[in-house]
Image 1 (cartoon, rainbow, N blue to C red):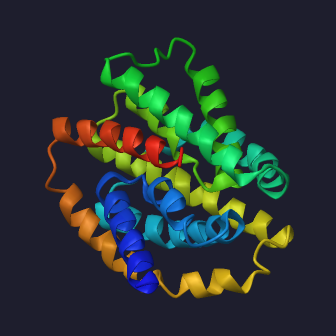
Image 2: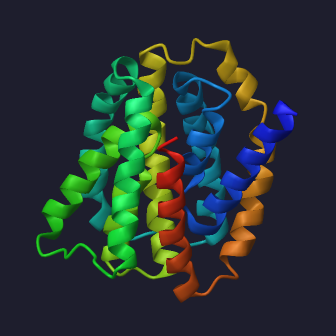
Length: 236
């Protein structure tokens, strides 16, 4: 039964990511937390995310405009080591609750039509990059700051998906290098969880198919609803 539940969590999380280009770690992290420690889940999710984002980037057949994302990527990469140290030394329940409260606050504001006005775009990208890097290193959740930033930047569905996927792929490659350096792959349970990789791949292709069928307006509603749900999940 445990095997089936874990497989189901990974499948659904991958479908969500395939459809929206974010949400795999946000959904999988709190649910897998009932079965594994955070120090097992986070490194595994980073491995899964690299494979998942490569698949999405190839399938959506759209490269993002890389130059505007370089500032965001630079500050995110520089901040990942801070997040790794947080993972090593801060209680995991505190981390999850902070992420949950952040997601709920963001989703409520955006449901009410309140978005971030990018008057100082470079500063906004810098702040989002720092927060994203710290969250990626700490709990493999780089998505929330980037999702909010790109949603406020009025990108269409395909640009949104391509930009998220490119950034997540880049951040996860750097993160996995730092995880190896800090000995976070020494736990054998990580490799047991990696056996579910084929399930994740199937879910990703299912999600990509669904994502191509969703219209622009419904896509934005789904993104906001997922932020709220994932925020609540991280509180428990």
